[in-house]
Length: 406
Image (cartoon, rainbow, N blue to C red; front, side):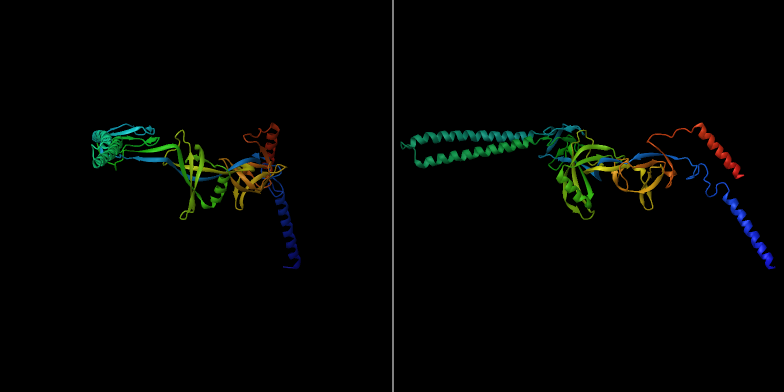
């Protein structure tokens, strides 16, 4: 092939490539020709999104943990004397008062012992009165020589012995009375009676259990926190009493409020790296029950003027948390943020990345990318329906696009 033909072929190839390039550049949907409705195109309508401003609030800061409810007092009621149980004076699950009769043991043996002790006391008291009278009469006769001094010593010693016997009898009678009183088993506290452990007719001893009583007003909630929180809690407790709330295990709704932190344990558990705390609740409505598991929320401080946004505004990306921030021209940008903590169930506290008054997107983020044009709406607001002119324009643009596609 001659040189002329080689040049001619090269020229033809260049012309063909130029024609193809021109056709591609003018093809519908090509570079520089944004299509109506396309993401980020010139003719794309703004994306409707819900927008809220960043606000300042006084935000309480909480520490949370799993807690266990513990009765203020738990008493196992045992008899203090042995005998046959003749009656029970309580109902299982009943609220009992301090001093209320719970059970009765057969008192006859103890009543007899008490009566015997009283009789012995009366006998020795009578003997003492006789001895004292004899001593008094002989004291008048000894001066006249009718009674020997040696006999007077005997009379005095007899009086002293009988006085000691009367004292001993009194103590024995009081002891017998105590044993008799023990046949009536009474509640030592205000509390709730559990399930009875014996039935009437059984012979009980001092090791037998009648019933267990639990005191519910007030009541304790025990919980553990990681050791890194110890300094925070101790410093906060020095400033004021710390408020504690018991939450439901299922939906985190408050079960009992008005709790106060009572005690921080004096050591850290080396096996778990936690320390134990005790809180007290008035429990007037019996919302807390011994052995119950609850979520505990301990308020350690309040941050004044914290920046707060809805939790749904925060997105998670490969480089951390971010939000879509609406700029002055109603376009959005990805703004990195640092979440400092939760505020209730629906909001979060922002540590850095935003300023008060700046607007963030809370709904519609899935349709956005940096630079997207948006139609900012208030929470609950819906975009207005398109006008007839807008619908006609969109229809016309669709026809033009289809015609160019052919």
